Image 1 (cartoon, one colour):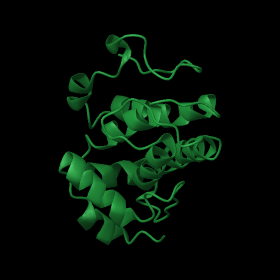
Image 2 (cartoon, helix red, strand yellow; image 1 turned 90 degrees about the vertical axis):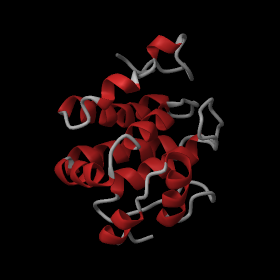
Image 3 (cartoon, helix red, strand yellow; image 1 turned 180 degrees about the vertical axis):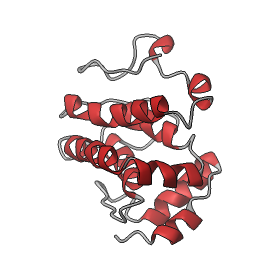
Length: 162
């Protein structure tokens, strides 16, 4: 099980190099899953000024968490989550809004805005990197339309400030 972690590659050479979602679903509560998710985010510093689909891969992993699991994740992993967000921020501020091959569409800066939402949901901070996702509510709507996950209650509980 691996993810595309080689700089200068935007996609894995073959599908077997992608994260195996079915294997990860069985270990959502494990630290292994959380470490993979955080490692994907932290690895973005190796891709400054380059397109990569890693932000989308991380979004898909976040979408495997229920709202309750997401809340627990950000509460229990506050320090590592802050470090992961810093890497996302550094990547997003050096990237163009390149399109990458993924189901979600949009560009990598858009993906970083969504990642920032997930990573900062507990500390109530939100920063968008493009004009597409300007509020947490817009991201909640996107996630609900795309994955059928309603994060609005979690958003209300956390009262994220923009």
